[in-house]
Length: 227
Image (cartoon, rainbow, N blue to C red; front, side, top):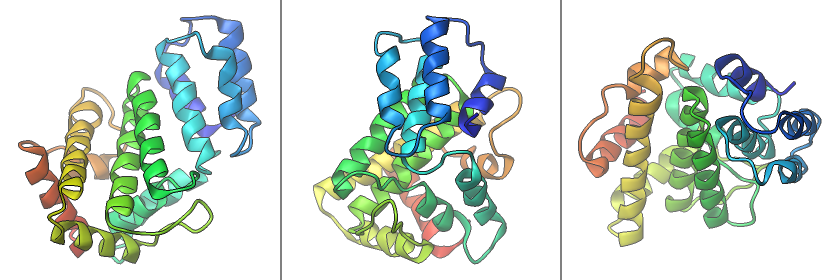
């Protein structure tokens, strides 16, 4: 069973909706390749329960090669390497399955919406990270795809380019990053009980204030390797 679905099965009650359709979709996703995942969702197109959004969120990440969890584990391991850190984690979370950087950014936003509706704090964290990462790559002028993802150095270069630009679209992208930083703080880290990743939450938990200001503060930390 896919790691992302296992995690959510442990954390949520999954009895709402049509159990047969949900079960068939889950089985389909368990066996789907990265280019097959979204076809599995046709069976639940008329179901809009939290667990149906767990499955939709999972399909988005399966499409990005997160599959059985190795890519998630590798991304969080970057935080233990001072030479890699958050920039390397974000490089891994950058979506790249669509034809253009703009399409990848929109796909990350769509997946994040599904993850948010799942009501699972871990999925909300993953979804927001994908938006932050893909927005940095797109707004920062990078060229990449699913098989040739950005590096930590690429992400730092993109952050520097974003911070130097006064283009209105870029300023909107910075604000969007700040909104997602705040979302991680509020929806995944400032919660009762266990948090998805203690080290990440210690970093994001204190975020508050104007989204654009928050974004510049966090982007600077990631660019300089402060985190």
